[in-house]
Length: 502
Length: 99
Image 1 (cartoon, helix red, strand yellow):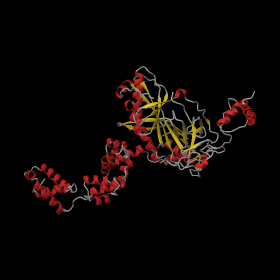
Image 2 (tube, chains in turn red, orange):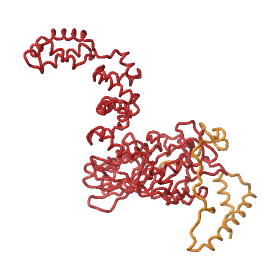
Image 3 (cartoon, helix red, strand yellow):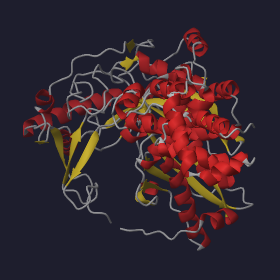
């Protein structure tokens, strides 16, 4: 149904309008048990096996808050430079929809646990401070599957079936203040923010933050105002944005759509929109203008939370090194440029390179393989780098084999290919594929004699002082050895045989 | 005048999936009416200088440790469901056709 929206090309849209962003990110906490009961939180269990009277809202059951979830939320707030409330309450958010068996969601309303923080992100060499409005704790909803109808969507479905395994998993919502002044970098800023937030969560160890599994989800608010105006436009909220790339595309797509409407004299409707991975476009969802009243009120079944300031300070003191600080430290240690560091960051390669360095590889080598051959293969198979079936230890072993002269780069690439193909660790692949460099001087000398005989012209040139021509001869030796010769040693021997000194 | 009508009790009963007989509807309508009336008396004494309270006890920070407790089996969990399909709760159509 299409609202097949008219779009204004991005550059033109940005000449005429300035975007203002807002991001709401939901993060499922990686606690053992749910927020208010002892059911497990693991992903992918058979339907309705992680449910109990509390998360099914059976009569007479009462919720009790998970201490670890409260602690994790406070730690997130501290990592995002927030103020931690000295006293706050849960609230009931009432709505009639079968994804929560209670007919309400336990959330926080006007008393969030953490407020007024910020997160700095780097885009294009610029540091942009994204201000955080609030961080609050709530419970996740169940998963509905819509049956019947053409599209599997809720519209036109005959009925729905619901699995409550996810209902009650602790969910932290992190809301930014409006982000103005990003100008044409808006899509990149949105992506950089979500990327940085994900890394903060990882460093805190509070969530596995897997966007493809829904343990981190993002709603993207975008509005446009004419250039020079100071009055913000009407915003839309795009849901269902489930990858970093999609965050960027959703912002860009929404800017292009809104710009076309505004330029045509139309008005933006404040509404929820759905993001479509395939087209990068959004379509209209329910309109906020008819939004329901959630009738929030303090949750009577749960007591207020009043974090002991001493506890909060203990948690603050125990925060891990935050990702941006760590990146600066690693950049210094590895001696790489800002640009290289940003490239590694964007490729999600920093942890991998660091682990490879820890396993004994020189930083330059670790970076070369992860950002070169391995990034290329990950890209080809559309796999996240970290999901490639090779460990940092194995990459470190390959660099060690190259450093010892047992492999050259070409053979090393074949070893990596073998490891990725599941043929075993680097040493096994070397053994099975027979990839060791020809180190036997006699064998190498025989190859060289053959190549010199076959390329008399080139040999003559080198003899006559044109040392540059030696490249062709070394190439010949490499070819004759099918890549297994040590090119450096071959060069030495060729020059020696031809009686030339460099 | 009664604050709670018999029709409202019938409506609540339907939302709560409680099958109430006719005499029960009358019975609960009268009881609920008394309860609402009793609670309404609070507004007679509430003055501007009295902050609204949400909890009767002066307790805070009642937490549970992050430990697993046994869940129900799907059979137990679904035993009270009006309809079940593929081990999931089957619910009527949520939204109509798109306008």
